[in-house]
Length: 245
Image (tube, rainbow, N blue to C red; front, side, top):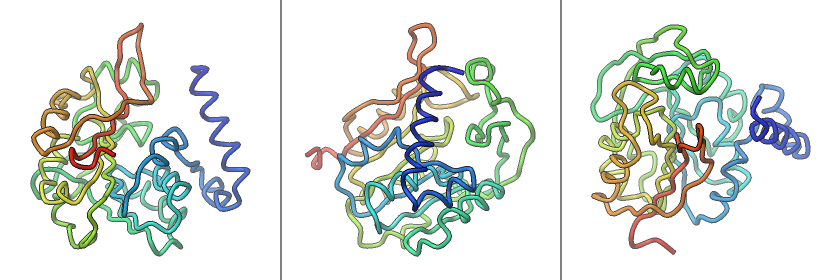
C-alpha cells in the first residue's frame, strides 16, 4: 500500500475513534473524508450538493465543517445508498436522492467497479485499472439519469451552495445539466483527471473551460495523485468570480 494512503487511512480511523458522532459511521465501514477538511473550513456556504455521494464520506466531512447545514446528496448505486442511510438517516438536514446525473433525462448503463466509488457511467479505462488497484469492472447496472436542475426546488432560496462532484469522468455532463443550479453556487469542488482514465471522459481543461463560461475561476488544487511525476488527477476548487473572497 502507498505510504501516503496508509497515513490517510490511519488519520481517518483516528478521527473517527476520537469523535463519538462518527462511531456509528465507523461501524458501517465509513470514515469522514478528512482530506477535504482544510478546503471545507475555508469556505462560507449555505448548503451543499454532494454528487457522487457513495457511502457518505464527504457528507460526513461536511458535518465537521458545518454542523446542521442542509446537504442534498446523490448516489445511484442501491447498495451504497443503503450504507449512506445507515450513516446519515437520522440527520434531518441530509437528503439522499438515488439517481445518476447528466445533461439529459433517461436511463444509462453504470459500469460497476470492484471498488464501488470508482464506478462510472463511462467504461472504465485500462489506465485507471493499471494505476488504481481493484477498480476493474465487475458488472453493469441500468440506472435512471436526471439533470441536477430537475431538483432545484431542494435548494430554493440558497445562494452560496457548494457543488461537489466525484463522478469518475462524467463531470462535464453533470455540469451541462446544472446551468440553473450553478447560478446558486458559490463554489464547485470537483475531482478531475489530467489524463484519460475512463473512456470518453472530459479532462480538467474542458471542465475548467466550461466553468469559466459560467463565471467560475480556478481557486486551488489539492489531493494530487501522480504517476512517475505525471499529474493524474486532483481535487479542484472553483469559485464564482464575484465571490472569490
